[in-house]
Length: 150
Image 1: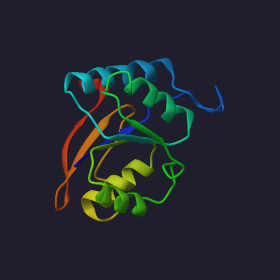
Image 2: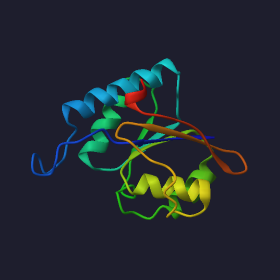
Image 3: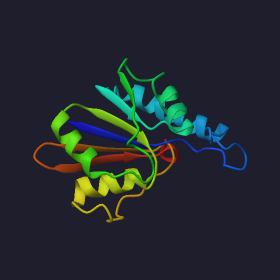
Image 4: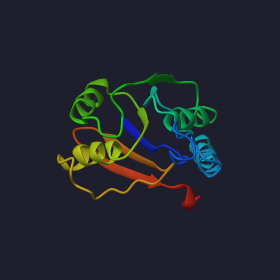
């Protein structure tokens, strides 16, 4: 199975808008990543995302570029939520999944999957960037791409 982890696009500050929707730059960078997803023919069984506006808007843009897929808004993907149960769920599901979320949650999840220690800070996320992991008998990093590389 493959797991695609995307940090939401760049958002407005809380002072600009308390809901913190995507900024114009965030929308543009996410569309750039969507075109990459389409060109690479990436498909997933499901996209999981938090209920935060910036995550929802990122998913709305990404779904314009990916084959029809199941969308799951979840309450357990917030910035400071626990990652251990998500690890267990992912390993049980065994389907290609995309998670659109936040830091530090995504960093902690990636660290737990790769290093069995959620405090390992070896992986760096960027807004709208994608990290692709694969699980067979253990997790491994396949690739990472950010908008500035495209």
